[in-house]
Length: 111
Image (cartoon, rainbow, N blue to C red; front, side, top):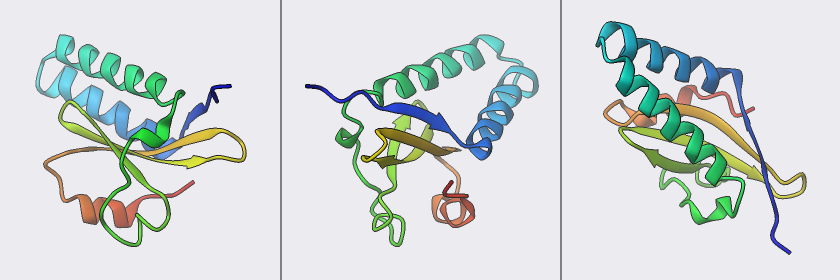
């Protein structure tokens, strides 16, 4: 029987997504691009409900050892961990892929 995971986002990840969408829609004046990105992010979260382990762990330590996965979505990286016991995927960050990932990983709230 296939496991179905529940995808949750931290307040940090929610805030990051809101800032990204706002920036694209209002600063870059590209509301359609913002909506397309939001749709892509939502689709990626839905995809994580089935077999989230297919997404590779990050290479960097100590986050790899903590079970942090990195999913590319357009020009952004979605970071998450999996709780097998409760069948939960916890999205902890959404970061623009050109940013210093190690710096942002070090600032992430894991819960």
